[in-house]
Length: 208
Image (tube, rainbow, N blue to C red; front, side, top):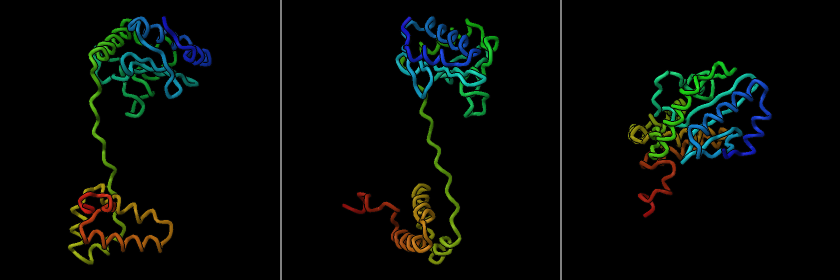
């Protein structure tokens, strides 16, 4: 099977308990997908086949492994777990692996790998997750007072998009001195009164 010497080196440097786990997972990947390509990404073995396919890693006391398109796999045996970022025990879908006995049966791993191969063969991609907007910062009391001094200015600010509001708040709250902060707040009030967002100079609406 086509292997990468960097993956060989990664496995060789892994803790003794981890080496057989990594070797076993590697063999399963090649058995399910003979045309897979080995690589190293983010410091860990990553297997590619017409795109991202499978990955594995080892740490001091456990290993982790996962499918890049796990959300699209049919997990008949309920072996896939949430990754650590979503409350799971490890950074991979197969959980925190501390011994060979904790791995799912080989036929289960092979089935999932073959499913992942078919997804890549068909060019199916993960749905794009909508980007969550950053929460709006609390309006400082001194700036809120300036806004409320003129209801039309307060209304203009309210009608701006959350991102435009954040740009104004960040502009003066990140000032290094009180003098700069106060100056920026006054400039912000003038622009808001005119219905202009923070970077209006780069908007064709105002420059044409």
